Image 1 (spheres, rainbow, N blue to C red):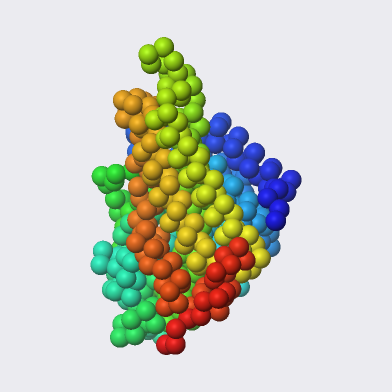
Image 2 (spheres, one colour):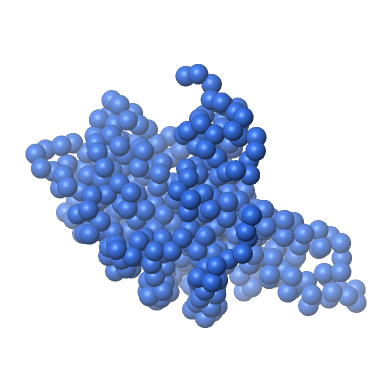
Length: 405
């Protein structure tokens, strides 16, 4: 078992770390307080090839592996959650879905400019009445000749009002529940497509969150991704990719809280000694260490499986659940270490706390991931969709067999 990073992986880690230190962190607190999206930082990410990091070079990407993507997401979210969110929706949820399910024409028209960072992309799945229950969506797309007429609404869409391209899911057969969902590439500039920003969020103030509205939008038939009725499969595949980046980014939150807390605990003195000498403070630091290292191991396990071409729904789910919960706990503990300064916007610790709350909800709530893990273990769900194809370190898994349908 080799935990050594390759020279290329070290290079991407060091490059992105320097980028965050020089281009993101100096303005992060100010951008957060001002609710300002740092477009210059996004341009910098595009210049580094981060917006197409795991997309093959033939389609405009950097062609790197998933371990590199994980390292990159950790460094980015150490600086700003809103920028890692862009990686999740642009690369994980949208571009990788086009790479797998898109036609060659769709890849050339949409994937290539996305991978190069020339166009931004988002993912339109969630609706006011359809979150965890995807089959409850009401957006519809009816075929009329060479077009589909799209109607409906999506909400809590990251980069809704910024993205040029949208991967939108709608019912082409409303009677078929999840088997009647189809996926389409929609352009924000098309007639009938409107967006609206979502205000008064708890966190991720420096990011873009909004709603998508579709009123008699004529979508060319060639913009159907995959086949009619394949939308649910595409959405689940996309979520596996997006959840992975969320988990990797959460490691960055934990690390930021740990590093900042250690530095403060060494400098801050009470009753004649550094607060790091007190066991209650050490207890909080130790919990952050445990949260970081367990989360990162789970993320790297999922990354290895992705790079090996193995189905990793279970492993990615486990990483996302554990890492996001650990990030929220680390941010909570960091505020406690800093005391009243941690509660102040001046130090930026409370920013990590606010930003760490949303990932526990989106791309599968903690409860959904617990359900998924339990059903895998109980045999109510086929292991990763197949028999026993799970991480080789999970020695209990191959012994389980799914119950008869």
